[in-house]
Image (cartoon, rainbow, N blue to C red; front, side, top):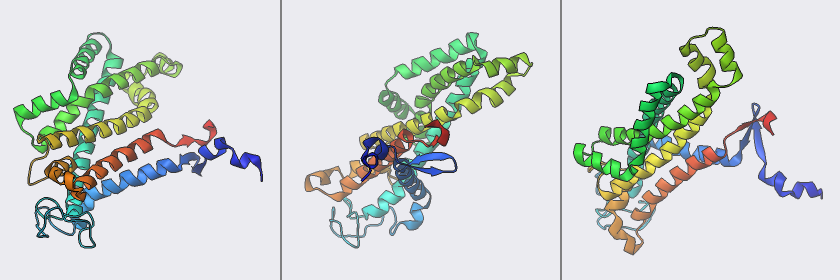
Amino acid sequence: MNASALSPHRVTRKRLVLLGWKISWIWVLGVLVVGFWLLMAVFGNMLSPYGNGQIVARDSFAPMSAAFPFGTDYLGRDMFSRILLAARYTVGMSVAAALISSLVGATLGILAAVSGGVVDAVLSRIADAIIAVPNTMFALVVVAALGSSIPVLVLTMAAMYAPGTLRITRALALNVSKLDFVQVARARGEGTLYIVWREILPNIVLPIMTDFGLRFVFIVLVLSGLSFLGFGVQPPAADWGALVRENILGLSFGAPAVIFPAIAIATLTIGMNLVLDNLPTRLHED
């Protein structure tokens, strides 16, 4: 047997080559997991066997069975259905908040980088002030003042994480703006919008997308934490964090109603991390 075939280096770097890109199987696994939950967020209400508030069993915290694959909750509602229906809140709100934070933060970060001077100083100091406040404290104060409606929760998450995106985008844009091809574009007399759109943005879009994935994971965890504390999505709606809180009394019985919402949160966040840690690379880069 060829000794090189058993080389750890060859095994750990085994990748699928597709259209000039090297794709890790771990990345494929992460994409499948995240894609599954995205589909459940969109089509979960169609696939759910029962309604959100429908009581289908006499006993609370019923064990797993053919009729109830994830058992039942403290009121006898099917947990499989509730997790599918809750996906639209956990996943949908997190995607919306991450998109808003990335778009606003990236726009302001590029604006600060290309403007400089007072604009850069003001935006940077505002971002620093928001980042200095602990995330959970910031969210609790806003929710206590404005309520815990879905728009308030989404905008609060976006406001919490946009400053981080602003700082990262500003740093990236400043680095790119000093490169030779940007200086050549300025020497040709190109305007600021052309330089931003054609020279700077294409060279920082991948790091911004990676940052979007990280913000998404953070937002999922913070939203779930708020719901567990009772400040997130309110009944009769429920996200995965709220499902854990509602069924916490079943923990001493080992009820699956407590375990499966936590597993859903874990698989979503781990899947996104697998995607971010194993991004495809160009074939010529190795």
